[in-house]
Amino acid sequence: MALKLFKLLVLVILFSLSLVLAQGLSYDKVFEGELTTTDETLESDEYSDSYTLRLKKGQEVTFVMTSNQIKTYLIVVSPDGKQYDVGDLSEDEVSLGSEARLTIPINKNGKYEITATSYNVGELGSYSIGVVIDKGIYSNFSVGALAEGDEKFENGEYYDTTEFNFEAGEKVNIAIISDADGFDTFLQVDTPDGQSLTNDDFPEGNSNTSRVEFIATQSGTYVIRISSYDADEVGEYILAVGHKKP
Image 1 (cartoon, rainbow, N blue to C red):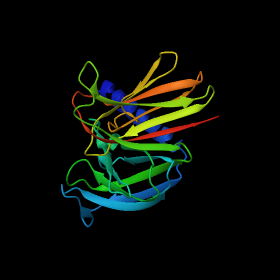
Image 2 (cartoon, rainbow, N blue to C red):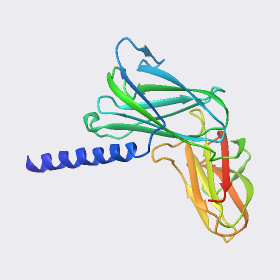
Image 3 (cartoon, rainbow, N blue to C red):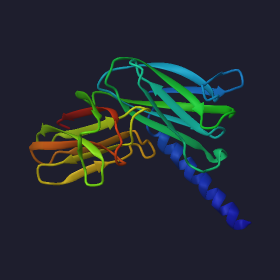
């Protein structure tokens, strides 16, 4: 019994720390709400609330939905109808806290629709959505697609390649994002001196976004490879690149 209580206490402390870290993000906007039986429902029957937020091209925006009453699920739709979503896939008890976190490089000005919902049908309870807006992160955007006929890695993943020139000392941010109908992204950046920087999920658990951040140690050509985590995945993506002197 004492051991169970100790484990429960540890879990509570860990969740409390995660909330502190989340709060330490210094939110630029916070939405507070509650899922009730009078709310609208999604096509899959989960209750939902929706909000809108105007964002600007070049920003990087992180949405953090938390609750200790429902298993969180977060949906963001861009002005051009692209949907990005993430849910809490952990097996932890909801009472110990639930979090869904999504980071998006903003490539279009306009109103973004934010939907708060639950992972399971019928869940009711309060929640909070914190929004962190980092301005002027990205300056270059391009749209592409992984498709049959693209080059492949040895393990069977398709990839596209592009190159950028960076100067030594520049702070570089590179991200790829694929929408809900896309693929599990994987990003690789090869430096002029032969090193490879890679990322699968950013933040952890968000399989449709990959991101690397670094200080360029030397001037030259950096090779960016946009790929998928699993073999033979195809779909559209957005590549966002930003670089500037710190």
